[in-house]
Length: 202
Length: 330
View 1 (cartoon, chains in turn orange, purple):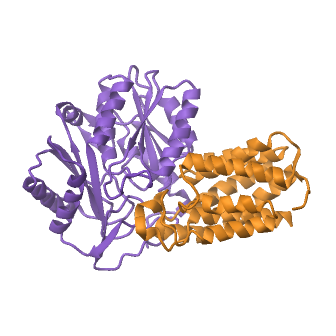
View 2: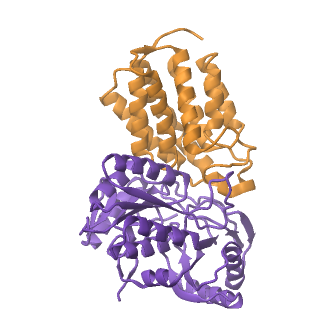
View 3: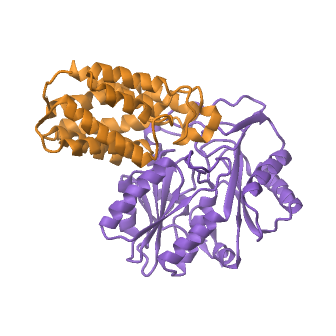
């Protein structure tokens, strides 16, 4: 993993790229949310990240932590559903962990995202294997130790691996056995955040 | 699918503008998505705030008014509102006697209301919350998100609303709301899937000649699919599913609720079957409400909710109410 220092501008680019990839994939997220959810994950994430992209463009925070904290707050205020508080908490907690530093290393980002992922697990009362966001976030953060590309790959793999899992949390859990055989939309959107990160790191 | 809309993005805002035009007794803030009774905050009264995704009308906005809610926060279609809405609503309706949040048990609603309660308390508003979880189609265990909140929400909002209107303190209103939740169970059936404006096609595929048993109110499929049943067979199945979890020693309130696309003619016919089963099972009926109250957009189907009531709950149920969706006098 390179020791490049990541500044606020890098995090702004990450959020902008995340908004773009979520916009591109919104329809697919909604499709995935139809058989096991309520067919709105794409629209909700799109609304939230459009707001985040607008925020970082018009009033970009000065530090990496500031970007993530403000993005998290924006998601909480604009997404709704479970995704708003969960994604909002992920980014806010990671942003807080980064503190006021003007630049951070990739390993500092990894440990900050780890704190964010822990907070998501606590808030949602879930663990890896429940067919949730965590199934992409946990392997993604772990693979950040290697590289941004490896993280994107691991998160994507984690999302794909939710297909055979029986859902234990969120709306998919209402289906019981019938949730098996479908890829989790939340894990899929989580993987998109890592693919955006790998994209801007190139 | 043909819909009476302009564009999908503005359906909620458009409906709120229409509500404002129809109901001068409400203050409808379409921008911030808060519906408040015009005379709020009502002095000496505990205030009730609820909310949830849109698409279940008249729930919750149609239940704002004297004898029921003080404010409602509509989210996007089938998406819980954001904390800012509930904080704003709480500030608008709190008379200093505290606010009760009535929350349907879905992960999103629970998380957003929880964040809102913390923020409102930071602003000096006393907040209590009650979680509605009446749907027996979902197995309640620590390994699931727990039973969903559906039809019983209407009973909670009506009965707690009457208690608040009488001037009962927050702890008492909250306790009554919890009693209603504990005494209520529901079961729902879909004869068709619903179509969200954002997606524009049915949320799940239900072949002709089949029905879904144990559906929720968000277009999510149920637990089991069967060949189409008659009204009589559905009533047997649904009422027995409810009674398996609720063993009423007292008379019950019955809600035969339409999901949005089932005509009242069919709902009343279904209610006749529900009453027959209840008679057969020896369950006394205190009051019955038939209509579209907790809907799921244009889904065809119905749900049955039973709530066993003592004298006090029945008195509060009978108390006057003046809202767009539910209205009766003394």
